[in-house]
Image (cartoon, rainbow, N blue to C red; front, side, top):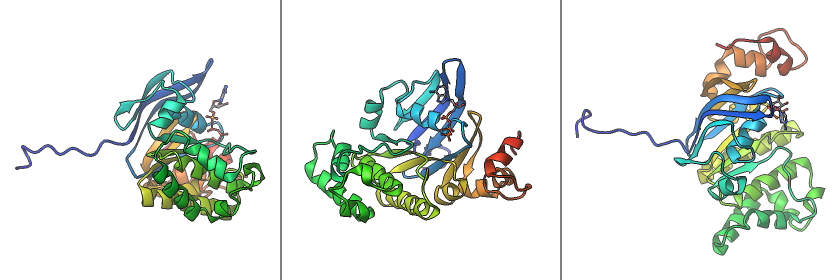
Length: 267
Ligand code: ATP
C-alpha cells in the first residue's frame, strides 16, 4: 500500500488527561492539566509542596471529582467514576504515606490487594513474584504491617497494588521519608516492575533527580498548571529544571524549592 493510501495510527495512550481542573471549595488546586502516558511507560510529575501533585493523582484515581476536564483510561472516560470502579479497571493508586493496614500481617495486606480477583492460580503466581521483588516482605510475611520500616511499608504498598492485577499504577511520592539508599531501591524496583510486566506508572515526586533519572517522560507542575512536559532526558537538560529542582546553576539557597519559588517563567 502506498503511503498516501495507508492509515498510520499511533497506539492510543493508556492514560489521557485533558484540560483537568479540580477545586477545593473556592480554591482551585489544578487547572488546564493535559498529559498522556502510553502503556508500559514510566512517567513522572514533579512539583514543589502545594503544586497540586496529590490533587492530580487523586482526581485521576476517582478519589476527588474534577470540576471539569476528562480522564480517559484505555480510551474509556473514567472522570467522575468512583475510586473502586477506577481500580477495578486496572488503574490503581498507591497513596502518599503508603496506608498499609497496620494491624494486618504482611501476607494479609497482600491478600487484600487481590480481594476482587477470582483467578486463584494467577494470584499465587503474582504473590511469588512480589516475594521475588521484595524478599524482605517474604521474610516478614506474618508480621504486622505497622511494625515494618517506612521503606518496607512502601514495598508492601507496591506489592499490594500489584496483587490487584493493575495495568497502570499511580504512585504518590514513593520516596517520602525514605533514606537516599532506600529511595534508590524503591525506584529501581518501580522501573524493574514496569519493564518486566509492562505496567505503566505515573509517579509524583519531589525528588526530581531520582524521578527524572528513572522515568521516561516527565511533567513539571507549578501552582496547579503543567509548565513543561518532555522526555526526562530533555527535562534534565533544561536550565530551569536544573536550577529549580536539581540545585544547579543559580546561587545556592536552602533548597531547590527556595530557588523554584523565585522563578516565574519557564523556557
Ligand atoms: P505536597 O507535595 O505538599 O503533598 P502537592 O503538590 O501534592 O503538595 P496538593 O496536596 O495537591 O499539592 O495541594 C494543592 C493545593 O490544594 C494546595 O494549595 C493545598 O493547600 C490545596 N489543598 C489540598 N487539599 C486541600 C483540601 N482538602 N482543602 C482545601 N485545600 C486543599
